[in-house]
Every structure is written in C-alpha cells, then in structure tokens.
Length: 138
Image (tube, rainbow, N blue to C red; front, side, top):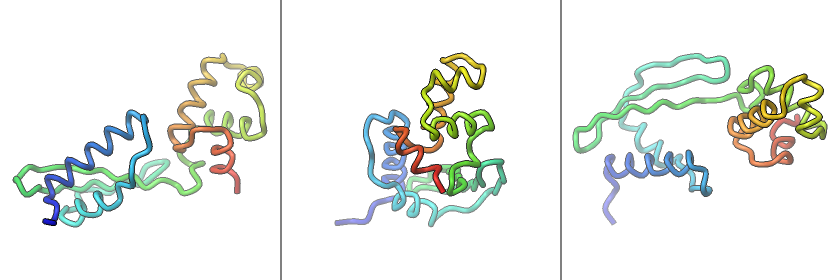
C-alpha cells in the first residue's frame, strides 16, 4: 500500500475538523494526521493566550499548495479556559444545582445560564454533567 501524500493527509484532517464541528458523531483520533502534517511544516509563531498557547505552522503539500495550521495547547485541568462567569456556573452545576437554581442564585436569566452551560460543555469537550464533574474534580 503506497504512503499517503500530504495532500491526502490534509484532506483527511479537514474532513475530521468538519465532522468535529458538526458533532454528529465521534471521530477517530486526528493525532497521526496532525503529526504527519507538522513533520513537513515550519513554525511561524507562538502566541501566549489566557487559556492556552497557540502554535502556528505553515507547510506545502506535494501539489505545491500552502496551508497553515494553528494548534492550541490548553490547560490540562480545563479550568483556565472558562470565563469567570462560566467557572462560577460550572462550580454550581458540580454542586448539583439545577439550571433554574443557578440562574436564580446568579441573578441572570435562564437562557443566559443555558448558553453558558453549552459553552462550558463545548470548551471542556463534555456532553453531560457527570463528565463535567469528572473533568473539573481534583
């Protein structure tokens, strides 16, 4: 079986990203694809952010097309990537409070808390309160 070209690898990684954004299904690990692409890239920049460090790479495929990849390395605990309000909501959820109780305690609307819960789940890549507690517990 012939080795994959960089163009094929890049196409597979783009398909992986599209599936992940839709969140319609769990997809296989992208690490081998990213590793293959980064092996042929030059680092352009390193940017320190509040919640992560961003590494930007540029490469050229076998068909002479250029591509750029930005990799974010987040805090392993996940706590640093949440805003102050999201962290407060996450803490209350981990204590077993309902969304309505959180809204009442924080003095915000129910829809605000629902939106914050969606953001928390997205940022921490969890899909349930049980997974949230496991992610945030020491």
